[in-house]
Amino acid sequence: MAQEKIILGIDPGTNFMGYGLILVKGNQLSPIQYGVLHLNKYSTHALKLQKIFQRVQGIIEEFGPDEVALEAPFFGKNVQSMLKLGRAQGVAMASALALGIPIAEYAPLKVKQAVTGSGKASKEQVAGMVMNLLKIKDLPDKLDATDALAVAICHHFQGGIQVKQSKSWSHFVKENPERLK
Image 1: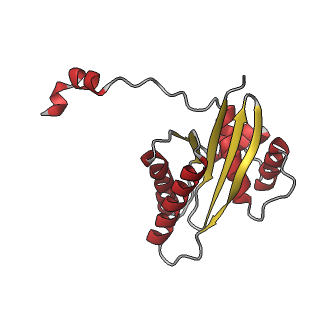
Image 2: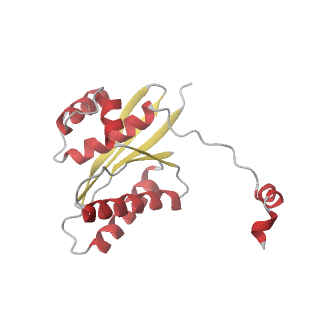
């Protein structure tokens, strides 16, 4: 019997945040839900971050993904934009971690390469390959959604998260008595 898991992919942003959930059953991939959170309508950065946190938690509570994969911010010339994007990614990560969902992040080049075979693929090329892999008929209005699905697909292709068996709390205390002082 093929093992099933749900992966939530997130393309963080401060104006638009793409999200996409895929079901992995053996080697079969199928889309569950995807879309874009429109953040440009909120007046402050703090409010945008609050909406990201709430929406990611809502998605996790509704669909119960086993793992979350995020696209890492790329290095740009505008430091303020990088800081804001990093905060958006951090809030999305914290939202998943607060609910006990393991996370992974991938550089944009890695995502493009995993999905299209080329790290220099355009957003349109990524969208085309995502639509082909997931058998999606209609192109979403915003490509942030297909970017998020690409992150989830990349995560699957990379083998997902290998969760280590954690030791018990009592074992940790025995091995680290100095931390209890």
